[in-house]
Image (cartoon, rainbow, N blue to C red; front, side, top):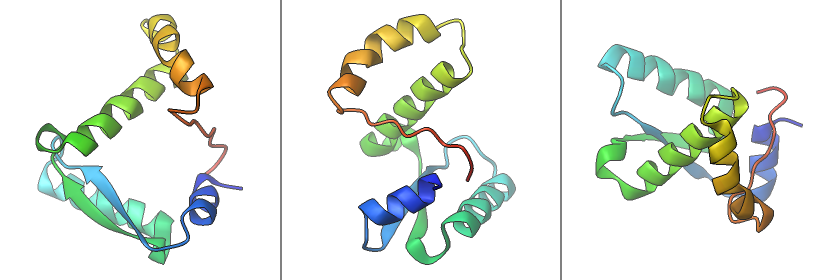
Length: 101
């Protein structure tokens, strides 16, 4: 099972995937959108939003960066793990390990 299979099961209606466009030039952004759309197929549409101007995207960006730091065992990983551990334990933040996309 891939993460997309999991999402399709949990969310049966068509979704919108929002990608942070605040860090990419236009050509790179188009490539990111095309790659994500290729993987999600017709399950969702893509929308871009600048995380600096969108609270929901800011939160997602912080969570993604947090989990990325844990995944790569950055120098801050131990401190980050301490902070997020209770949120993960209470399922406020839900983490699914991805084996393949």
